[in-house]
Image (cartoon, rainbow, N blue to C red; front, side, top):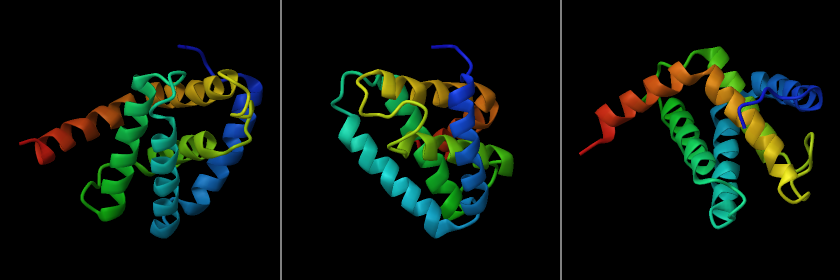
Length: 138
């Protein structure tokens, strides 16, 4: 799954990036996105078509955004926040390049966008994981 988003996926993602720019500094809207993410994760955790790696990645992003909203973590660059939020909006949207009700294919495009973003912002995510380990490990 190490491919770049296709033109259709990129088009839909760009729409979500614009939406993300409008809500990235609105903590109430960000909290709503996190609530939707948690609901979606709960609904998909038992779905074998989603790999554990994707679920764990989404949980990591959710924790990073939650700690950013609370002010506990302040090292996420604005552009990273916008792009990751756009990826979450894409993931949460019922209709995107390939609607999620299409078995397997509907989640593959979501995964493609999320994996692509994970590669693009690997350093920011690794920096967050290091911070999280230092601040929340026993």
